[in-house]
Length: 122
Image (cartoon, rainbow, N blue to C red; front, side, top):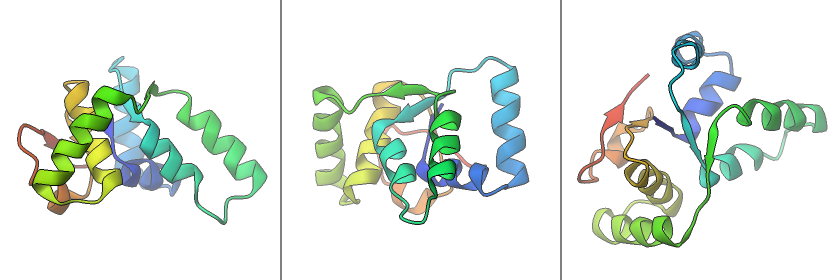
């Protein structure tokens, strides 16, 4: 699975359904990918205190980090050109496609346009 930013935000915000789902997947030993773009978006919130940032960084460490490399960049460019979605969403979708995993998101509207992308909602 590849997580969208809104899933991380929901988890950190205390959403019980997202917390239960991610905890279950971790217990099952599922590999959960986190795009560099998702980490950037989550850590860029301006109102994070130093302690909140430290705890958020610690939380993000449990996921398998995927760099935004040239292959994913080119795939994101192709996605963006065809679907006309914003760069962060294209990069996150490209990460899911590059890792051959479904994207876990609550943003169906933007991602449903992307050919070959499997979406899981929580």
